[in-house]
Amino acid sequence: MDNMLRSAVLSVAGNRAVRSFFRKYGMRLGVARFVASEQLEAALDVVLRLNRQGLMVTLDYLGESVTDRALAEEAADQAVLTLRRIAERKLNANVSVKLTQLGLTIDPAFCESMMSRILDEAARTGNFVRIDMEDSSVVQATVDLFEKLLKRYGPKRVGLVLQAYLYRTQADRERLGSQGVNVRIVKGAYKEPKEVAFPRKKDVDANYVRLVEAHLAQGCYTAVATHDEAIIKQTIHYARKKGISPERFEFQMLYGIAGELQLRLVRDGYRVRVYTPFGEAWYPYFTRRIAERPANLWFVLKGMFRA
Ligand SMILES: Cc1cc2nc3c(=O)[nH]c(=O)nc-3n(C[C@H](O)[C@H](O)[C@H](O)COP(=O)(O)OP(=O)(O)OC[C@H]3O[C@@H](n4cnc5c(N)ncnc54)[C@H](O)[C@@H]3O)c2cc1C
Image 1 (tube, helix red, strand yellow):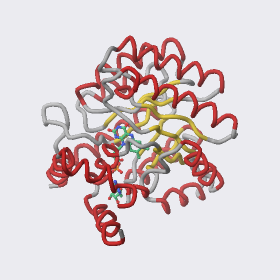
Image 2 (cartoon, helix red, strand yellow):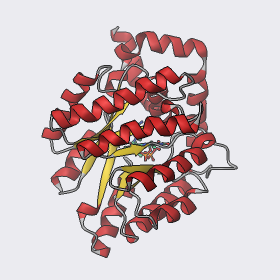
Image 3 (cartoon, protein in one colour):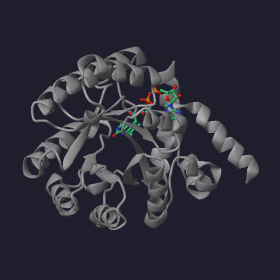
Image 4 (cartoon, helix red, strand yellow):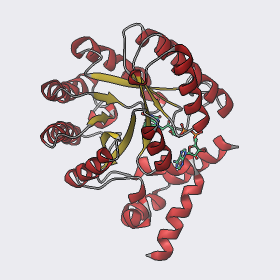
């Protein structure tokens, strides 16, 4: 049922009329709950506010599925600028990127050169860049390019996201775990066929826990990215039982979601990082947030009546 609802929301969101309506009125209709700002400097002010609450941040310049080299170059420039401004303002934040925003589907070699620009700046400023994982049509290409970059820059500079809903992820995790990769584990946000992904939420959740425990057991830094309190509790329990220090992992949550839980974990001594998107191309990101929890549509509807 959950998955059916999620697929339905993602299909409606693809409709051209719905898309253009939201592009026009979205920021007023509640998008601002999930997106820090359309501008970098204002987003950095949000980072400062979060840092003061004890939260770390990963900044994401919104955009994906770029088919134009100039747009991919612009996204790479934004990521470089973001890293530079984080260092200049001495913020506790790193950067997340999507390879399809950096030209992966245009030409992987071009995308690699965009990533090199970004990772050179990360090396210069002593920071870290995480590659988000997108839909299953680009997972192999993303893993391939990540492994190339890993050889050049090492696991302190670049990390990857793995999705618990994919059957292939156990094998990917084992291979990356043996190379000491810093992995963010998520459930997975895209509409995927049953040939590649577990259709039942119960199986995704069970796989998620297996992946987190295996990555921690292997001694790798693990980003546990979920708002699922049962999984968060289970992770804390596992780490305590195995004597794994809270320095060896972090919880990650999305900007605008479960704020109370984020602060409670900080008070309890855990590392928490808030995935904070900014920029004008927020539509696909926003629709995935609605699809995960259709109740979020209430925020949109309330915004409509206020507008
Ligand atoms: C930091 C971070 C980075 C991510 N990066 C990626 C990525 O690179 N690739 C990818 O495919 N996916 C990514 N995701 C999304 C992820 O795959 C899930 O779609 C998303 O996290 C929702 O699942 P959940 O783990 O919170 O568990 P769920 O079981 O879906 O939710 C658990 C509880 O969290 C709350 N919740 C969940 N979603 C929402 C929401 N949208 N609004 C309000 N409450 C909500 C609800 O109370 C729900 O009961 C990321 C998620 C996070 C937190």
